Length: 444
Image (cartoon, rainbow, N blue to C red):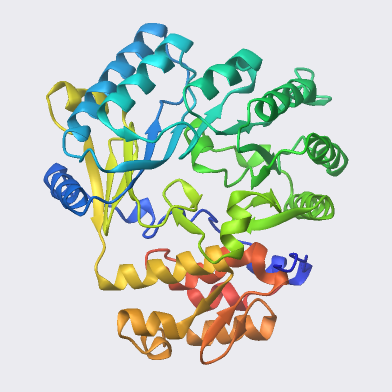
């Protein structure tokens, strides 16, 4: 059994800096306009010929939209499904599916969208795949959970952000009774997992109020809990806008909230999967991590190795073998391209041997909290220490600090370093722009 994580204030003070996402490598900030629709079509043909299984993500738009605007978006999305689907083969099984975004479709709209997807793509029979959806607490109830289950969803993620009371004198967050109702519904309807997102670090949060919130969430016993810093929220919250510096808590208070959360969840039996995700010991992702079969793609952790990832919708990312392609992030631009019978491709990246090697290193560190250098050398035909000679001094410094254990054959991240795996990954990221030695030598 994997050892629990532990809190080390000195390590957190030295290394807890910068973006922690690393959903894919390279990060979308490295994408460029030299990749276009023809590249995507060639990749889809290769995927079809190889009959590789699929991981599918459909992105709904963020923000407030009128009913007519949202209906127009769904019509364009259906058009994109047609244009992409005709280049995929009938034997390519959709093993993983996620519907994300900030907008809430009506029951009729959602039913039509799912029916359209199932008509064009090879979805699995009831409960054979991992099919998840993000839901909005104010618009969800038992009936919602029932409809989603009938449509084939078996994983659900519920955002529970804090909201400041109108008076500014108190703190409020969504009624835990409603969250309990949704979790009860999920259990009664045999969902595989319920994830709760909770954030820390707002200026009007206190250590006591956050501890109470975490305790209330633990009492509800969701299968998974995703904890994030409001200064660096998950991708699904970023379109809502960065929080102003004045709206964030002091770093000391943020670290205290994070520590409280880690300790409360650990004591309650939650295991740290990584990148802010905690899960109960019988969760699919924990089991996959124990079996060394955990993967990570554009949507986060996954137990489906070998899938090509297809993204549909505004700003969606596709990952097919070594090619990354992103749709237009501008809603009007996305729709205009589809209206012109063109794919919505905006930019992308084609991985060469170096990116593939670094991507594998980063993925294994994130998923396994360790790395077998000999396997990397055998797979990519390199001498690991020589290939990464420029960062070796930084790795040795991390070892002296206790962040990692390093020898000639492996890198291991001990319990005290697992909250900081992103700092180790950043050394191997040639596009991060982070001065390597500075990040490991600054004073506590």
